[in-house]
Amino acid sequence: MQKKEQMYEGKAKKVFATDDPNLVIVDYKDDATAFNGEKKGTIAGKGVINNVMSNHMFQILEKQGVPTHFVEQLSERETLVKKVSIVPLEVIIRNISAGSFAKRYGVEEGIVFDDPTFELSYKNDDLGDPLMNDYHAIALKLATREEIEQLKTMAFKVNDVMKAYFDQLNVILVDFKIEFGKTADGTIILADEISPDTCRLWDKDTKEKLDKDRFRRDLGGVEEAYQEVMRRLMGE
Ligand code: TMP
Ligand code: ASP
Image (cartoon, rainbow, N blue to C red; front, side, top):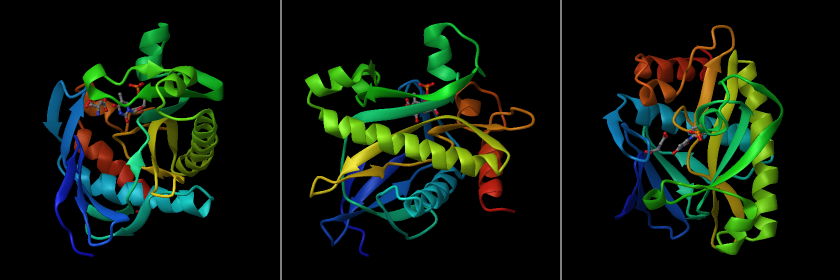
């Protein structure tokens, strides 16, 4: 598949056109940002790990009946995916209190919820991705009621599949953010990435953080944490 002009560059990935109008190539970078781009850095080898891990997770999810944008991995950092228009809503599922949830509601991290929570943020860097409820998203015509119900059903399914998968790797899936896209015919599929950038992953025994919180909070051992997740995923 021929890589053509760059269509878009985000904080962690670039997107390129191909000969096929329905397919694009994503190219994962080592760049890392936090706090809406205020903190910048690089995590050596992150692009490779996030590419391989996302594709691994997308294939597991496809097998469990969740449609995704994944088509074919082309290289260490590049993957062919279905072209979608991204629904500008970040969908966040939480199993355990952490991060902005703990801060917003003034609770400690680590409270295990009886049921997972569902939350939406408006994907808008200028506004700092504000938290939003379903009525707000519908009022702003970011999605219809039916589409939001579909996002919710798919997100909980993703959580069920990933929680069980990580559990057998001795990893707790604390929370994660996913994004969905619409294909030319309006079908909603899982897009973007699933990686230590977008999930909170804690070692089951030690509760050690194996995700981007190590970068966000200057905990050290950032590269090692990404490599450890990769090692467990690949069953080494
Ligand atoms: P939060 O607790 O900071 O709201 O993060 C919830 C989850 O979403 C966590 O797994 C990290 C992920 N996340 C992203 O993928 N991108 C972001 O920009 C933010 C703020 C969080
Ligand atoms: N990726 C987000 C940003 O740059 C934040 C995060 O993952 O914490 O701001």
